[in-house]
Image (cartoon, rainbow, N blue to C red; front, side):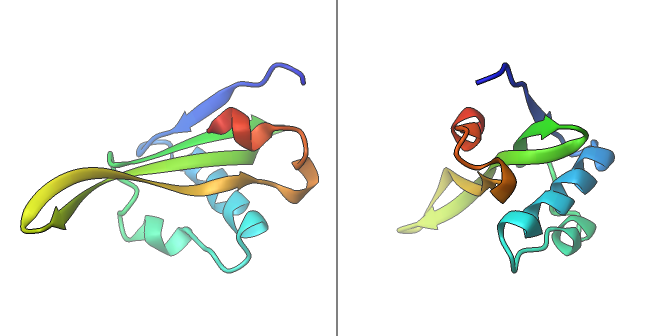
Length: 99
């Protein structure tokens, strides 16, 4: 496999966030992150790690830091999400790269 670089899409990276929002419905048919993003939910707790090719996201893994209440105690946890690869790029190990 050719050398690939993973880009972290941060809270301030609005242009890269747009590319991420274009990627999501191509992999997850009913998902749309645009409204979630407009609500201000893309904050420092959400980190997307995208594999970029020709100016678009082709594979991604995201992690969301969250605080959970378990048995009356607050616990820091992490949730993986938006893990996948464009159908046209599957079978090349790209999702493994972003994981």
